[in-house]
Amino acid sequence: MGLDPAERLRIEYFWIDEEADMRIFLIVLLTALIGVGLYVRLAPSDPRVWHAMPDEMEDVDMDGGAKRVVTAGEGALERLHAIALDTPRTQVLAGSVEDGKITYITRSRVFGFPDYTTVMQVEGAIQIHARLRFGKFDMGVNAARVDAWISELNRSGG
Image (cartoon, rainbow, N blue to C red; front, side, top):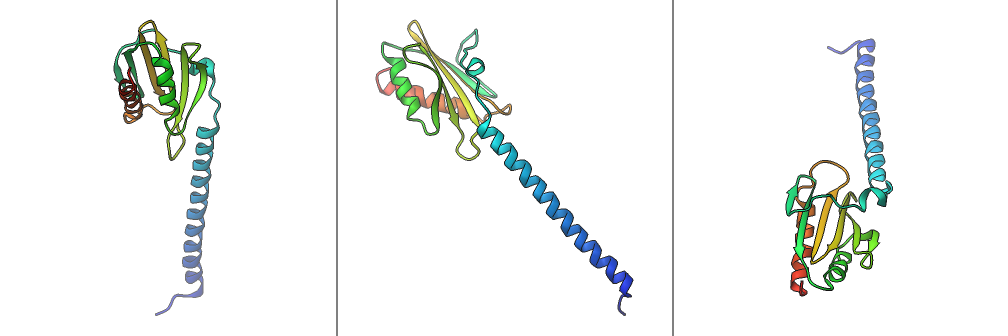
C-alpha cells in the first residue's frame, strides 16, 4: 500500500528541513569555534596587566598556574631567560634581564591559548609566577613548564 502524494511530500519536506537545520547548526558552530580561536590567538596582551608579580610569593600550585621561589646565584636570571626562550612558542611580552623582571607568553600547541610567566630577581632568589589567561584550570601545564625551567637552571649551575 503506497502513500498518497500529499503524505509523501510531507515526509520528504520533513527530511529536507531536518538536513537543512543540521547544516545551519554546523555552520553556526564552526563559525563560533573559528571566532573563539581567532580571539584567543589575536587578543592583545597588555603588559600593564600581565607584567606584574603578586604581593606574596611562595611555592604553590594553583588551579590556573603556579608560583615558585628559587634560590639563585649570580647570572641565574640570564640563564633562566635563555631557558625560557628555548621553550617552544615562548616570547617576551615585557621586561629584560637588565630590568630584573621579564614576562613571557607561552602559547599552547593546538589552540594557541596564552599562558603568562613573570620571572623576577629579588636579592638572592628568583620568583616565578605562571598563570593562564583564559579559563580556570590549566591541567598543571604552567607548573610543569616552570618546574622544567627550574630543573634546567639547576643543571646549568643554578
